[in-house]
Amino acid sequence: MLLAVSLVVAGLAWKREYDRALAQERVALAHGLALHAADLRDAAPGTARNLGVAAVKIHSDGQTRAGLIDTLVARHGSELTPNASRKVALSGDGRLALTGDGDEVSVWDLTTWLDPKVILKSDRVATLKGHKEGVDAVALSFDGRTALTGDEGATFVWDLTDPAKPIRVAVLAGERNTDSVRALALSHDGRTAVIANDVGDMAVWNLTDRSRPARLSVTRAHTSSIRGLGLSADGRTAVTVDNDDAVTVWDLADPLHPVKSADLPPPERSERSMVATAMSANGRVVLVGNGPRVEVWNLDDRSRPARTAVFEVPLGYMYDMTLTSDKKTALLAGPSDSVFLWDLSDLSRPTRLAALKGYAREIESVAFSADGGIALAAGPSGVSLWDLRNLAEVVADPEEAACHGNTNERLSKADWARYAGDADWSDYGGEVSGGLAVCFITPDPT
Image 1 (cartoon, rainbow, N blue to C red):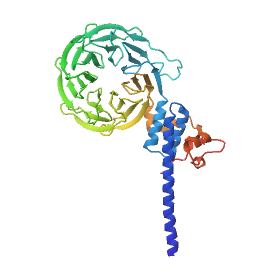
Image 2: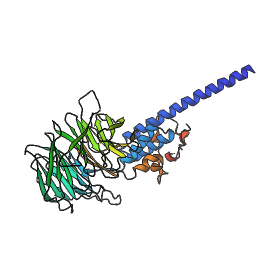
Image 3: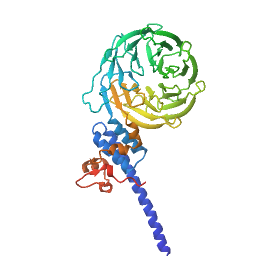
């Protein structure tokens, strides 16, 4: 009896060890397939999708799901233009875009770009010209009817009621002709403009009559060049960041007399910093990024901002960031060929949504439509466009998003051998002549 009990115990122990080893092999295989899928997104997107589905089916965890989500989202990206662009802007509905290129700004009607049935995509519809120096900042009103473009010493106001026939209606001159415009912002109704320059000034303008703009105030906001600027939809709250990494929140309820509400400490880091900031449409949420660290601030009480969360993204520096109008999604950019989407639905627990790999080697500027359905990213090697209107469905269930209407997708035995190594594909449903139906792999029992 004792011998029988001992054999049973030994058998159970062996079974546990066997199951543990099998599970570890399954995890390793899934992670390996996910890495191969990431490498193939550009060269072989179909194979990348199939490998990503197989990885999730074999072992679903944060790594394999994130890899499949990134692969699926990449299929909705395209190159808008290969021309260098330092700044981009989008209208609220994502249908009109501005891209800065040297001393010109291109106007794009994205209607054909957002319709998958249209094969031939439209080129830019107009060019905003007249700047003597390179354009350093652009802004577009929510309805796309008003645009601002800034260079050294001046900001042009444009009427884009007919995007194909833009009209320059006014010039907003700086305090001195040598003061370069570094950042621009418009309220949603296009009636309030905020201009920041390289000597630390923040100017507020009334554009109710675009042909006769009125400067309401000029404030010495910082002692160094203002690098970033955010403005609430109603134009009553602003946030600025300068080259010394000082981040300041401003109360513009009385635009004649802007008042500093608070200073936000930038996230700490040991190396040389590059701070960026963004503000939600309601003016109650501010993001401050410094290299890999991003902080979320709640401004319900603007005099006492509360930091609600800190998260990290794989960026050495932070060049630009933006928020959707509902403050639930953030888009972050830096010295990388990818921009990163984060879910801020719970301000205390931000979560990663996806990495969007663009065509630009380095991304300097990003823009979102109001609902986050359209995104732009710009850099020295061009501008990338993503259609993210089905992102929620992809994130919620990447397996269903990948397999819906594609249940016959298969991996060949040659591809399995190439990317799965010595793993026996028959263990996962592989057939000698029919390939491996990735959408029907038996899910990981764990």
